[in-house]
Image 1 (cartoon, rainbow, N blue to C red):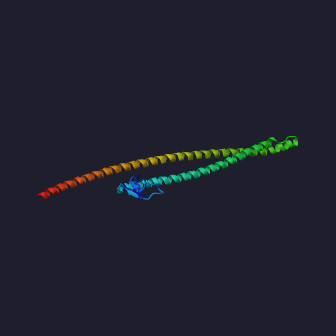
Image 2: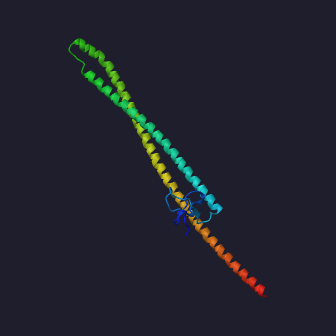
Image 3: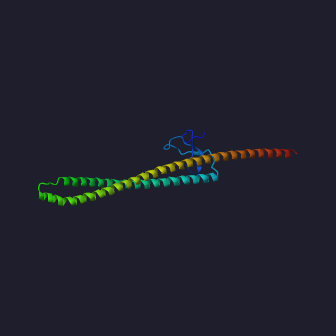
Length: 216
């Protein structure tokens, strides 16, 4: 049994980073803050081809993580900008609606006490009608812009969902690759064990032959 510097039995762990992924090791059983730093590997270093495969796999995983973070930042920035534009358009839209209502109220409250006032009313009405028409056109344009912004937001949400699916697929592929490497490791261990047995058998045969020769 391996003891750490605290006099406590070391705990067995499995490495999950770098070219030593999957290797077992013994380390101090206390928490990280109190750990004495004792580390002793249980498994030997992996063969070079397995280390290269693990290195490439971790590089691929880190590249995917980095690309995903950048894409999330870009989309978050775009969503923020579109939301700001939508809020500004909403404020402008509400202001225009208020202006139209005020103009309509003004038009309805124009006094018509005499012919002079009626003439003044008729002179005022055409400009008001023109302003109302112009405001209605602006409101229609803003409605169209709001719809376009809504479509863009929906597209971004669809892209985020698709990215989530891609990330899940990458994680699944990573797990499958890890499982494949574990299988290759077990097969390699079995092969090494067979070679060791064959070597021991050959040594015994050579010793028997040597003993026979020595007797003659």
